[in-house]
Length: 636
Image 1 (tube, rainbow, N blue to C red):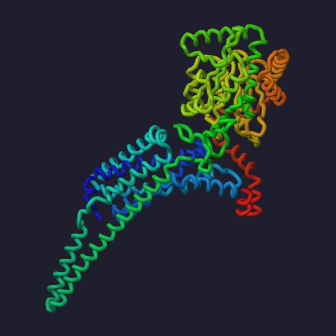
Image 2 (image 1 turned 30 degrees about the horizontal axis):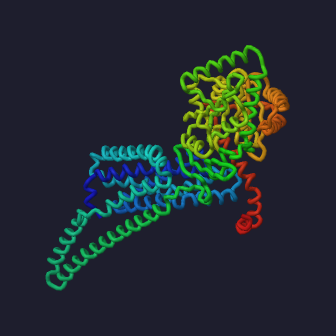
Image 3 (image 1 turned 60 degrees about the vertical axis):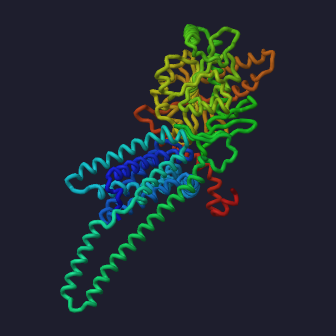
């Protein structure tokens, strides 16, 4: 059935525009829906883009075929209603499907858990609605091209409308809807746009009989006249033909009315489901099984959740892979890698206080000049400063500040330090001040760590690299070129400490690549494993030997504590530093190398996380294999 709204081709171009916009919005929404469970690595993005391209290609083929077989616009806009409803259902049931797929595959396959689960989840959740939206373009070509003479320009305008819609569908979710209202409501907004588009079509009046119907009626009339002439002998037969013609017209009217009723029902059902999704699907919780979260939300870069109790506050950016930051309210050691990393500050301070020579003196002069310049420009960070010796503070730079746990711990256990941080996600910095007691005097720059070094002339005594988040490792902060920049921003005697958060067991794992790359830039590298975690801390320097410097620093620290008159936190720190010294091992470098040109950190990280998952679920997998699903549920 043709409708009057189709006379205005602008409406058809709008259909193409909003279809393109919705496809890109769903793609970006898919990345945010999957990230809390599978990370936002290049591998996950590849899976999302690949499955969506599959859906669009199949949709184009199917839409073109159906447009040729039955060029009825009602069919197209009915598909748009189904796509809109499906997209609205994603925030309601999508996270449950993702976890179900994850749980099923983790017990049924032996490798590539994350990649396989992400792919299957994408195929189930996102492919079908985008397949339906893929039918839009070939169908609209059929409805808008009136003659072959204008076919090229019409197709060009349709593609332009689709492309412009795709551009807006890329920018709006990233910079407007997701930061403002979250992923769930973003899905609902674009679902609503498609539903309105289809509603305008089905609520518009019909044109009446189309040319084809009129032609059929005229043919029927002519045929009836001929039959009447031939068989004029009986008036009964003439009346019969007339009655048959009227009956066909009546049947056609009934058929059209039934079709119209069916379309109205489709639209009504779609609106009802959409409204239900608006009521039950606006909840943005990804960790829906956790009811005691202090904060849960999203930023431009991350899914964020904060858990808080009387002892601590914890930040996580992934519902399945551990924590990113911990704040101990009782002002004690965290029991995590931050405690081990503080050995870098001890070594740097010991080098400044206990060594003589032109390098150290020149380094101190350089720091004093930088301190004076910072005070003059009002950019001085006063956290931890206040030593009565008059010595320049130990300058610490943290790349990947997070909620500032390392900065807070250093401020608790060391005097005369100046700490500065770089964090790409401003929302995390806001949470750090709100829930993690980050000192307001500590300067935090919202920027990429490597880009910060490229724009910064200052040098530091300690640079902490803590930018490897869950299983996502930024390749630009893992290469030889990056670590060369870090080395060039260290003062003489300076120390770099890197938190390697995925401990691989196989030859050629991600940590070997990172450690070998660092060893190719620094003269001395040592590592220490953090018990009961997958973390290990790597220390690197270009003056002296890391292990020797650590041993000497601990000896000097022991002597200072032995002569101290007051009890404070120093014995606790001494115990921790002795532990690091005892477990620190020199790193023997191999030939693995990461460069800006070649840094396959996503694949290497995925291999490690597969091993970690395999190890974690081995117990439950044995129960599943022996006793089946019932036995597993009994244990859980």
